[in-house]
Length: 93
Image 1: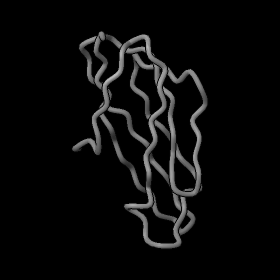
Image 2: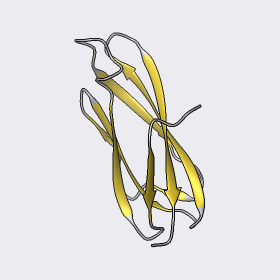
Image 3: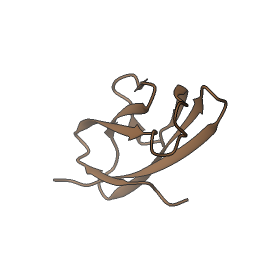
Image 4: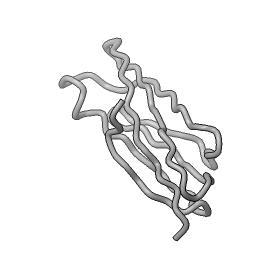
C-alpha cells in the first residue's frame, strides 16, 4: 500500500496528524467512526478525534531512523469503509 503522505518527527516530539477525507468521499457523505492503527514503538499521548470530514491522531515516541506506517480506517454515514495510511519517519533533529 502506498502511503498518502510522509511526515518526519523527532523521537521527543508529540504532534498531531490529520487526514481530510472529503477528497475521497462523495458529496453529502460524512465520517461517523474512525479507528487508528498505531504501530508498536509509537504512542498516542492524547485521544484521537474526528469531525464529519477529518480524523486526527496524536503521536509520540519511536526510534530514530525508523519509519512507521500509521493507518486510519473510517466508516461513513452511508456505510462506506475506507482506510488510508501515512508514513511517519522518526529522525533525530
